Length: 120
Image (tube, rainbow, N blue to C red; front, side, top):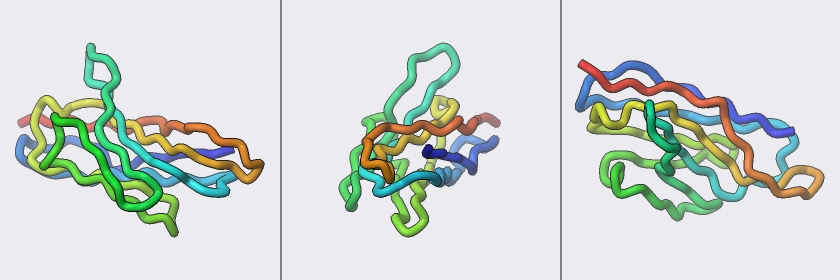
């Protein structure tokens, strides 16, 4: 039905930056909110940031001021600009999309995840 594909992860030194992308495709009528989550080794999944269908954004306290979520509605794509990265940001990052499908069903879809490693 709907596929989400993340990209942009990798290895970066502390203090560095990365930009994650997540493109949605498939049976999409409209995309409501989009969000990023992460799961660090040995920890529970953690919400990172959300952007609604407009420009309203929310962030976890742990990333506020360092990460910026944005979206390109024409491309069905959400981004996560990550600056001042810390080793504690090391995790697999997942994007989600709250989608109304062409069949008018509404569901949340997840991407497969992209690894971000912050290490010197």
